[in-house]
Image (cartoon, rainbow, N blue to C red; front, side, top):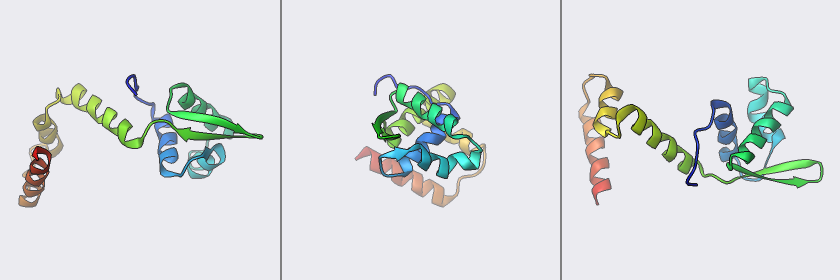
Length: 125
């Protein structure tokens, strides 16, 4: 999806429910897993899901009175997109800047360094 855009937090919450369940997804499923907790009414959930359809994140089908939804964007693809934007915007694509900010001057443990070195070795092969 070449023109993917950042989702507002509420729409991202809906997508997390979509990704956590086997398709097809219904508004009732979203209400049970998120809407009631957030105190959203069904029309709010329906509106958010239709926005996601319009943005190309979901596909919908009408089955009798009920609409079902299918994800068009994989969770991993969206997280890769978001992480890339974050790295570019806040760290000028610098992994060192990111790690430095993450640890905020704290000392890395030997275990942390070993894990990081192992991760780098895996990526080089």
